[in-house]
Length: 251
Image (cartoon, rainbow, N blue to C red):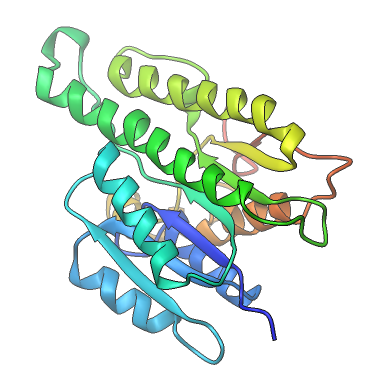
């Protein structure tokens, strides 16, 4: 019996958002789950929650999102399951600062760049390196690398100079990798999340009524299902970028 494939996600938070929903969806789809996120009690509880039936899951905590820590965590994932293939890697981590340009500090710019760009580079490098050593799967691909984007990936605004610059960079990285590694049957895709996601934090700010209305809020599970769709695409019709928004979102 072959080992279950591995789904690696960076950026889980308290598991109420896109990262947590994706981990649950891919666990149900037959993957073992590797959770790379900031150290927290909820991270380890979530890993334990996912370990049901044939599903194995493990937490790989980091103190902050930077190149070295993400690189080390990803290598630990491969050490945990040395005989299994990493078939899907989702970079879902993000950090934003919303304030006027002249009020931004050097420390804030550094953290935005470290989380959204440098950590993404490390994650992508480790994922692609893993994919390159693997045989083609039943769909003719070696692996799928996914990036979670945002409205700020496509346009800046009055208080998003740092965040948007970083999200533009992440989108450009994903496009470049898609073009470079598609010829090796490695699928790279970027998702523009254009709207508010119904996480615990957003519910506390916008209310349960907003979160419960699929016309107004993005469901984390809906995003996760879109990611699974990307992974299951036939290689004759791959998507590089899709945008997701609730039905009544103004755009």
